[in-house]
Image (cartoon, rainbow, N blue to C red):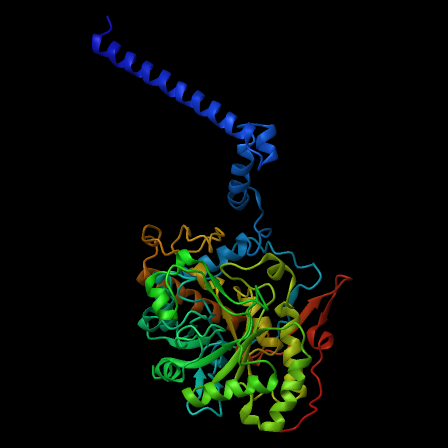
Length: 499
């Protein structure tokens, strides 16, 4: 005999089920009426209700491809193998993998390093020496590391993300670039070396009219940890267009740091109005360096390059001290929170072409030792950093590598303020998962592991430290499947101008 209370419960459940089915049926009818009468979407108009699943599957497709269907080396902009390599390094596990490489070594352009039959013994290994930036500045900077954090502003990144990177940079002994959003308390919190970026909107050093304020420059330079200033001319994902931070990410604190109105789109001009030719560029650099007393360089994307040769000639006319202390070369396939697709996909040379081009110009013009070269652009693994140093870079900076190290999962929500890991969102509920102290350890471990692995490549090639790598240590796969030495493909030029 079934108890009465059981029958009562079953009756209630049956009624709820009928109500639920009825509600679903009513909702389907409502969606059918809406879809069949709207005119914006042809698929939904022709296939009411069912057509709605198309948009859902498109949104979910990128996640299914990432976790289920794409192979380890297929995804863009960074594949699973690269992301997992960063994850291993940031967790202190090293970069040890089993059973052989999954990387194809035969495609044209693949870089291979030339191992020496007599590699450097452990007792003969030399510690990577600091590199001097700004020999003619009042306060030169001895940069200790070949691998550092690229420009990412507070605004594009969340507060806990900036704090984690600052703390991590200090632990690893590397520098951190502020990006164009100004100097925040979180940048200073860790006590790491800082490169302050002067963007086209002069965020952080602008007056009420949006022009550069010398007083604010001095105020920034007064911080001992601010080591250098970088004048941003262009960035990889959008050369010829200024930075963009959506209004929903411009909270009151960010607005105060930048010197702008809160909750309005933060749109930078596409260039510095004060800089319109090589002469005004050198004037601007000299002004920033004289006001701050610290090394001052530029960041740009290489497209046209005749101006660089003319710039070198003008430097010799004015005197070698007038040169920028460094040039940061950003790759045309660089990353950002938000950028127009036509620029991101089609404008600017990649670092593979731009770096040797700039190095060769500086060598020919006799300025390679005066102007340091910093390079960025998708170099998140040791091989990319070692290649850049072999070609002629003095240092490498990475943005997205360090984003991965503190938890980024490449969800591609950077501009939506909905980043699920808290790296690029200002929603407190989503920032909960990013604990700065714990993530700072991962950022530091990543940096240390990268430097260690780059040194390992150098030792395998028979040189004591990474900056001793040269083009002769690299071979590149050609169209016929065989490799050629990089110094044969890109031979060092003759010096035309002697200092």
